[in-house]
Length: 84
Length: 369
Image 1: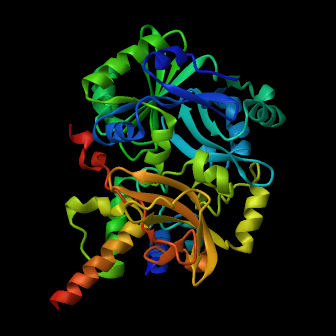
Image 2: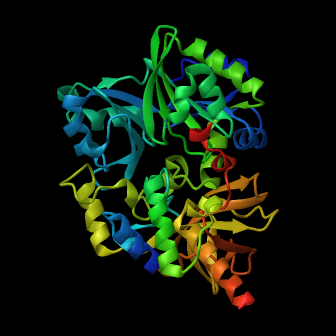
Image 3: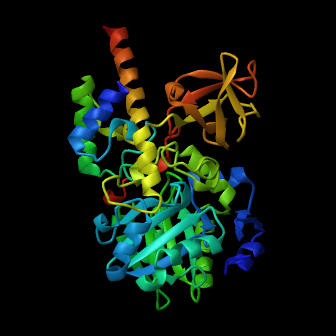
């Protein structure tokens, strides 16, 4: 899941890195990758397309790092599994 | 030993200082919990004058800085700041750097882990004299204003314009007929501003800031609290894990490097190691509340054998539990795994997703103020 997300992130944002270069704790916004609010929208689309998960508007804090995104996706998938 | 021009003012407030790489730094002013909570809930003011500070005219500075630092200096837009590092010839960390493109000048702020003399030798060997590098280290003071309410103080002193500054940007503001270069930066995960102030007005600005900090329920802080705040917010700390590990690839600092540029100091060694593949990686770890064995240097065990070492630690006053960073072999470097700490049958330590806290500042939208 982590590698899929990294590959999609690199492709969509045209980042000059390989998946191995992206540490899972790297900050996606501000410091770290230094992405801006437009990039944040692209990341949200990336998550939604990769994992079929919706990120609520008020929940951009999920984008703190690759690991926090993956934690959120796992939590949402588990929740879906419970309610399915 | 180099000391800060604000040494006496901090001492008057009860500051305890210590030596770090030949420079005196304010370690703490109150107890660590008070200082950490002040930054998370209100605001903290810290003397960062230990930082090396340089001014380089843009024309000469571009090639000088780009050949020196790992990041891409020509790509820094006007008014913006690049976070990158300075390495030695072996590609090991020497300094954690901010480079600001401030119209006709570049400003370099470098938190180094070597004595001043060594940095001076690096700068000279790299052609600092030819590039006209002006050393501001002793002529200027650097103050760090951090915290959930830091923006309120910045606004009161410099005007509402500061609210529009994006993270990693620079702007110049007048203060008593002098220019203060204000960096919207910081490594606590709360709002942060670094103020580069000419020594002539530094005491007056300090007094103004200190009064405002007190009014907003804040606290003067030392670097020990910042070490913990950086770890808790998962900002790279050159004085903790940086000093102990020194390899930027193991530390996950690839984002600070432009691998496409021809060369930079230590670049060949770093690119060579990258081509060989990374075998070790830094990961966040947490122990149970009350565990006192999650300390720097502690070994981490898996199935009876040592697999990792703790390279930084703190007590999180937000989570009320011990946190750390440890270097694992890549096959074990994932969050959500359990290990033993200090001995094969020691207490449990878990790898965790970082950052583990939700900073209050993330709930504030300055552009809507």
